[in-house]
Image (tube, rainbow, N blue to C red; front, side, top):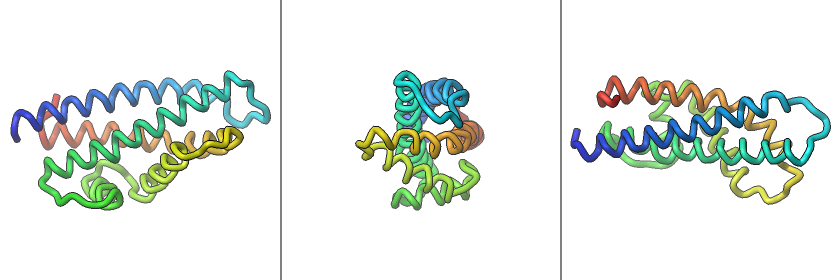
Length: 150
């Protein structure tokens, strides 16, 4: 592998790790807020942070890491669905369908302008966060074993 590609992979892994750290913080803070009937403005702001960080990390994983790993593995470029399916075959994720759901939810988050929808989106994001965290661990294992990234 070329040194330039290895440096790019290391940089993307570092970005992904930082985004993961931010999402974990929001996820842990929001776990205490689940199943309430009414939310304060501060709590709704926590939801906003969580959903924004969820969307950002899912983009980093799907749009950058999956594509870069496919490129390094000399795979054909393709659709987002192609990258997700190959990620499942490589063991980067446990379920392609879950990551299709994550991608659809990400699109909803980015294009949702109704502030009253935040609680509904929050309730959809919370159960999907562990799939992102699991993918991070799998991506690290894969890149370390395949590309000898430290």
